[in-house]
Image (cartoon, rainbow, N blue to C red; front, side, top):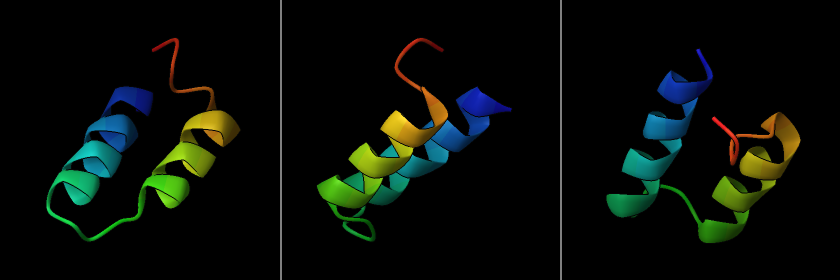
Length: 35
C-alpha cells in the first residue's frame, strides 16, 4: 500500500500537480522513506 502511495506522490510531483513541500510532508507523515 505504501509503495502505491509513494509512486502516486512521485508521479504527481513529476507532472507538476504536487509541490515538493506537499510530497515531503506525506513522506514524513507516512514514513515512506523506508519503503
